[in-house]
Amino acid sequence: MAKLADAPDLGSGGVTPVEVRVLSPAFFRMTNWNPTTWQEAQTTQQPHYADSEAMDRAVEALSKLPPLVSSWEIETLKSQLADAANGKRFLLQAGDCAERFTDCTPERITGQLKVLLQMSLALVHSTKRRVIRVGRLAGQYAKPRSSDTETIDGVTLPSYRGDLVNDIAFSELARTPNPNRLLRGFERSAMTVNFVRALIDGGFADLHHPEYWDLGFVDHSPKASEYQAIIASIAESLRFMETLAGESIGAINRVEFFTSHEGLHLHYEQAQTRQVPRRDGWYDLSCHFPWIGARTTDLDGGHIEFFRGIANPVGVKVGTHEVEMEKLLDVLHPNNEPGRLTLIHRYGEKKVEGELPKLIDAVQATGKQVLFVCDPMHGNTQRTASGIKTRNFDSILSELEQSIDIHKKMGSSLGGVHVEVCGQNVTECTGGARGLDEAGLGDSYETLVDPRLNYEQSIELAMLIGQKLG
Ligand code: PEP
Ligand code: CO
Image (cartoon, rainbow, N blue to C red; front, side, top):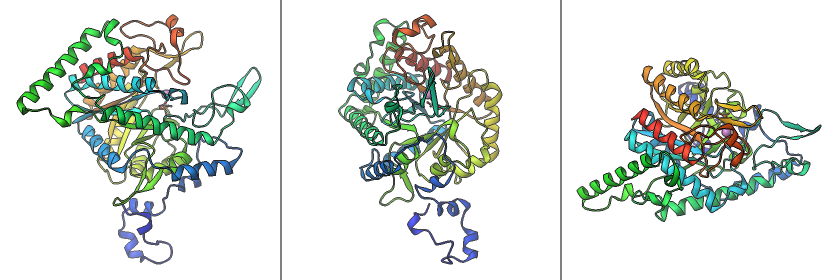
């Protein structure tokens, strides 16, 4: 991919028509792309800032700050995702539905890291595949909403769009989109990334010490002994390999960790999108793996326009809106670059059987390779009789199990899972080994947007999918 600066001037005669014809369509399109071209497209789900100059100033300030991740890490992740598409690794993408600014605390961050590490151990153990750990973390601050406004007791205010935009409190001041939040969100993302890196570099994620990641799970869960057995067996394998090697094996002491969020707020993403020395293309350096939400997949929309130009591996949620797959792949995955595109399907347990085969067929018809991942959360949200948003553990598991079977039957494979989890003992989803029922939802229901699996449910899910895949 050529850098914009090196691109021939197609309009004014720098290149003859004959040369233009031999350029690939992808190259031709890239000459018309830069991090702001999305602004010319119809873009949904963006907040309305009354003071657009203040917004411009915030974007300008953001664009001068150092990035959160590097292009080296992004390329490493891309090659690991390519391995996952080939069945050699498995992607675990997990974290909050919406991070809150108040979640930027050591307890919360270690909680999320621990739950991801524990889930990944369960998956490694049974799938015998290396697991790529990607957090919905360090920037998952912007949320799509079904309506621009919310009305309570006759008062209508802008909807809450995530802490990056406004505050959940129902007052005019709190709900007015505030551009300074873009900077506050970026800073919290930086602090989160910094702490995660320090923990990992300092040995917290050392596979010899999984006890560092204990969440209290072992004390009282019905699944505790199963988890302990997994830990013991991994420790045993490590010792065995180290005995063979005669020393500790550096590369497996530490795990790697990547960050992701929905690339929804395009001014925010634009501000962190840079060209880097000695590499072609543009990188969105706000996280390693941004994804396009299910509501913003319109082929002519600003999100597709923005994402087509960045070199990161990208995800696309599929399930609520009709997507013309061939065209989508043409725009986002023109060169069939290994690891570039992940399709995250989220149909729900009742629809997956009818819809997933059509998706797989449509992708197979293009001859291109993508990584298929199942998000078993967003198609299974329900409300209880008293109006509480919840999800049931068995529905989540059922969508995952059906997905694994459907892929297998069609000569495809499920290469990962995308879930909303919490490292605390919240009560937001029903079911699981402890049989949380609707009456128990009120005990510790915290989420601002979607219900998450608590740590026991998360680890149980990882053990069950591992068994199904193993
Ligand atoms: C989400 O991942 O929190 C979300 C809003 O998902 P989707 O775009 O699939 O609805
Ligand atoms: Co969600």
